[in-house]
Length: 272
Image 1: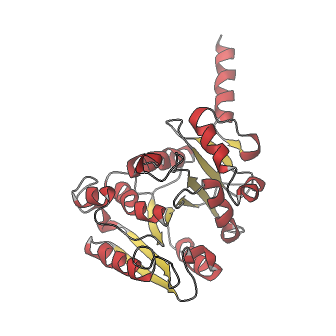
Image 2: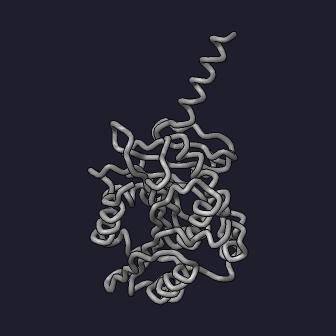
Image 3: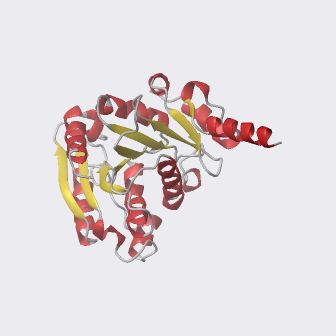
């Protein structure tokens, strides 16, 4: 009986970190993963052989990637944009990460089929899954960069507040890419109401980035991110840089390899 139990545990552990080519998610998580296969860069992501992990509630999945060999010293946690896919997120990040000592955790936080709030994880649910994924890898506080793109950026302020005010202080740096803070957004109101602690953003460090050719300048372009940087400073956060790319649009961080390289160099050259 003990032997059967041990075999079952081993099988379960191996299933929970299957590479993309062998993933066997079930239920709603499997449905979301099937939708991810329609993503523009899904085939590129599969070639990288990431681990695909079910979320703790069985509603979605996590993509975890590192270069073969030892565990990296640093990690990036990335939140995709509106109706995006964590698998695409990996493929987009990979050209900037290869040959660097850094791994990537990408959260599939869009779990539905439409654009309503019920189709997305709330920041507390996002952070819960981040925490579980990083704990499984023994990731230490202060060794992670949080990245949010577009809608992921708009939610990153609350996720960072949770980490700093109620969480494990994983994030030494947060990068808000093409997604401004919205003061009437419920997660933002929760920050201001003290739901995540007293001035939780006070200890956080940020880089904001936007492109001059963003089609929605007040929401995700340079004016919106300028306003966001000012708001972060009002909350006591340190804004290290406000990158404004005159030649790029939505997603200026990764569309311009120079921007991505600069941000990664800054993160990886810091003392953990």
